[in-house]
Image 1 (cartoon, rainbow, N blue to C red):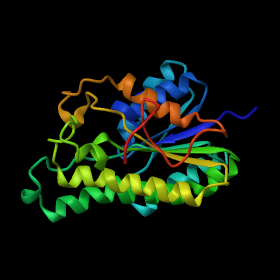
Image 2 (tube, rainbow, N blue to C red; image 1 turned 45 degrees about the horizontal axis):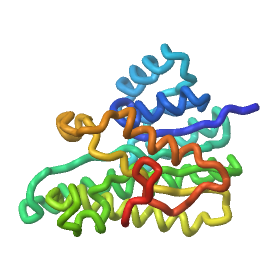
Image 3 (tube, rainbow, N blue to C red; image 1 turned 45 degrees about the vertical axis):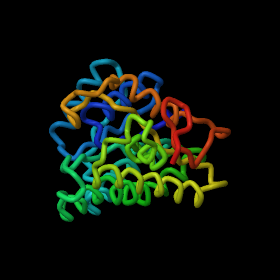
Amino acid sequence: MQKKTVLITGANKSIGFETGRQLGRLGYLIWLGSRDEARGADAARSLAVEGIDVRSVSIDVTDDMSVRDAVARVESEGGRLDVLINNAGIPGQMVPPSQQSVDDVRNIYETNVLGPVRVTQAFLPLLRNAGHANIVMVSSGLGSLGWLSDPNSQFYGVNFLGYNSSKSALNAVTLAFAKELVGSGIKVNAADPGYTATDFNGHSGYRTVEQAASGIVWLATLDENGPSGGFYFDGVSVPW
């Protein structure tokens, strides 16, 4: 029986790397996507030492040719993809909205919004070949307009224009793909990994990468009866 395969973007460290580790332990063949080929190869070797079936693939989600090359590589070595996890993202400038440059906002959107659109569109033929597949968009609680507009929410005071709105947009992208793919056997959901200690925040988050990855893994391993078009934190629905 052919192993199930998963491709994770931005997976050479932190949450993406740990997601690969957890899915690898479940028996998935891991395509460890990384913009930096050397760092990706190093990360893949460290997972391989743990007995995980892993392959490093170079992919820059902002570059059409890089994404096409990654698709060709996966197709040539299997012809299908069971799970796509759009994890790559950047924070941009953490400044008040009135001080953030339009160029910085545009740069954030190129990676955090258009990147997942580009990658999802490119890999859809391979996901369709799997029969049943899952797409996971790694979003953020900072993309929840419900939480951001609630004075009682822990996120209310975190007012970053570029990053927050990019994750709100990614949630809309999630819903758009989920609606199109209803009945296709492909589930599309967004995950909030929570405030996790990573390079993003100087490791100030209160959650571990293991905790953050677990909710992503849950969505990645949904069966045919699982939900689609939702936004979840540790398996619990998050307000849009």
